[in-house]
Length: 519
Image 1 (cartoon, rainbow, N blue to C red):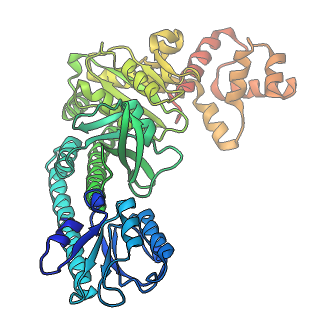
Image 2 (image 1 turned 180 degrees about the vertical axis):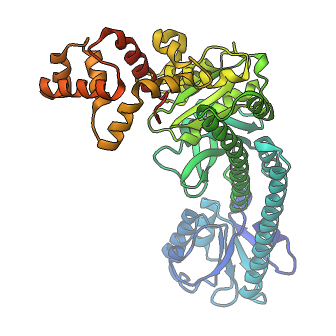
């Protein structure tokens, strides 16, 4: 417990007597230390909260110095002034007492028989006891918070524990974008106003900071600290109250912040392990190694029942948004429909959503907009009801997500022929088709660093007109003619023959969407 000047005055063994500044006794804060000085101007060596002990040597003959001494102690925020009697003066100088009354600074006398060291020791012991109690409370809170995290109580449990130790305050945990993760205790301050007061953007704090703000129509004291994972700010913990926190209370707040960090790290570890399982499934699925009963079994272990209906979402990450942040937000949004099945492949994020007709994509888009993300693209596949349809659904979602540079939700059905081709042949038919039509070209380009595939694509895009195609490629028409001949020789299909144009067009379209890219 903090030591108050009234407690020292009430101790009969010390014999202290309050002679001036009575009105300030209840206004001054607790005694933080006892400092002895005979200097006329000791305030440069004071921090505030001290009781200054003096015999008056430096000011005994000058009323102006006496007044300036009291004024300086008041401005520094000292808890009181103790005047030792019988060394130089037998009573407190009138100017000293008058200024203490005027400034409501408690002024008390110390009997000659009581050495200043006795008073200093009493204060030092009280401060040490208080610091020990604070540290013991912080350690106890840390242990309890750790137990809550390990026990799976989540952010709600962490905030509840901290609020018990810091009563009279409302607690809110925000994510980096200002969305509420958890709260405890009533508050009349709007979330948006509170977030504007504590947002870490541009000035992430190294330690909790306390500020006074006009919020909710009244002055509020707001303490905020950031939770980090590595160098990234992940969340902000905020306490809102009506009084300034003590040093011990800030230490307890820091234990709550440590608990927030632990809970975020624990959640990230669990989520990352699940994502890694889905990553592996996606890799094997798109390689054609996960089919039939094996695929059904692995989906069941992830909590998916394909027969209940599903569709796949593909998320293209907005600029400036970390992949793990996008994954975490998607998992939070999709968690309303059960445990999300979410993984990554080729720089894109995929989610398998049940039931097939839910509005999960729209909810994800709204969550991104609320965080100020621009360019979040979400592709949505056709609904499926069989395990072996998953590979095609993944390709459809990818085709819809990368269809153009704009963001927003896009259904594969809006892509026409491109969307139709993206999901054809869930058992590897498209890959085999691309390999049969374009395989020799792809092999030749990879081996010789040539541009036969790009030349074929430009030729078809130009409507099979050599002039425009050569212009796009920035080569001579004779060079393009040579390349077309080479394509004919390698594939057995003449690009100048209309009978082969459809095959080439479909194969190039599939290749553009990643089908058969490794052929």
